[in-house]
Structure formats: C-alpha cells, structure tokens
Image (tube, rainbow, N blue to C red):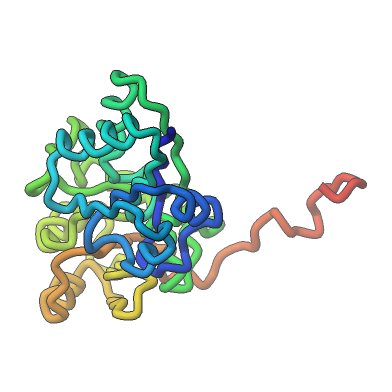
Amino acid sequence: MTVYFVGAGPGAADLITLRGLRRLESSPVCLYAGSLVPRELLDSCPVGARLVDTANLTLDEIVAELLAAHAKGLDVARLHSGDPSVFSAVAEQMRRLDALGVPYEVVPGVPAFAAAAASLGRELTVPGVGQTIILTRTSARATPMPEGEDLTTLGAGRATMVLHLAVQRIDAVVAELLPSYGPDCPVAVVARASRADEVILRGTLADIAGQVRAAGIRRTAVIVVGRVLSASEFPDSHLYSAERTRACDGS
C-alpha cells in the first residue's frame, strides 16, 4: 500500500502528468482538495473508488482516512492542486505518515506560476533582465511568515516575484513593493490559470490594485511582479549562440 501525493496541476484537467494520471487510475481511494482540483479528474478513478473531499477536513481527519486505507492495503491518490512542493500543506501529512510508518510517494505536477507564465506568454528568466524568481505569499489569515521573509525584505533585490495566496491583500502587496520596484514596474495577475474561466490582468504597481478590485478577484490567483513581463530589448541567451562551444556528440 502506498499514499501517492499527486500534483493535479493548476486547473485544466489535461495538465496532470502521465504518472499522476496512472496513479489516479490505479488507486481505489482518492482524497482530493475540493474545488481546487478539476472534477473531471475524478472520472479517471477506478469504478467504485472511495472519493473523499478534504476541503472541510482537519489534518487529523485526513490522516485517519489514509490510515484506514493503509489498514485495508489500499493505495491512495492524494490529489493536491498545482505541484506538491509549493504551498500544498503536504509536509505535515508526510511527517505524520513517517511517524506512523506509512509509505508514500510524491508525484510532481505543473505549478500555478508556470501555468500563469504560459498564459501570459512570457519567460520569467530573461537574459540581462531577470534571472531570479522568488515564490512567496503573504501571511494574512494563513501561517505567519518567517522572520526576514516579508515583502519589503524580499523585494529589495528587485527579482521577479510571484505571490500565491495574496491577491486578497493586493493593496498591502503594492504598498510593500512600491519602494523597491517603483510605480511603473509591470505586474500581472492571473486568476484560475489554465481554466476555461481564466482571467488575466496586466498593469503596473500603480494601477493593478484597482484592476483587481474592479474584476472582483479574491482567490485562486497568482501575482507576478517584475521587469521580465515587459522586456523586449535583451541579449539573446548564450544557450543557442553561434559563439558557444558545442561538443561533437551534440550535447
């Protein structure tokens, strides 16, 4: 028996990985993250599979479901939105399973920030403009941020920043980033990236908060801040440069 922590992707059902889909198709128990996981994916579960929406469950209740499946020798597909490595609350579940001796495997998925970049048609690492990406969030009603990870400190280097779970605090986000990035810094907000009802807002730190309020976006969105969003004049990457020395074996 194995618990498979599967990244379901950012929203579109066909953005789950092949490995993730296979784990889902073969697991007689599936715990999924409520409205964050495409309902179409549940159609891939085996006939008669136990389907458990974890949206209103506590950690103890979730672990109890995993233990019940373990006692019966049943594999579990534990579906999380995006990729399990980022803001997924997988760490505390794995810690519990480690203590209980329950085996598990993590299956990566397409993260929301990658889907947002695809929808924007932008590379987030542009030569000569930005080569660093900060993935972060704000505290608000969630777990407090560790010391030194406030937006003012993180924004000091003006690296490209992607904020999850922060759109409901857009005014505070703008206020904290303005001193480092400036009012003309490009910003994009992508809500429900990759889904049919996706919404894309483009602007600057000076006007993005007003756009977010006007659009009524309150959740399931990422905020991207950085000059890479509007970069057009930049050097070509060395990767495909004619001046780059290439090995004879094509590597």
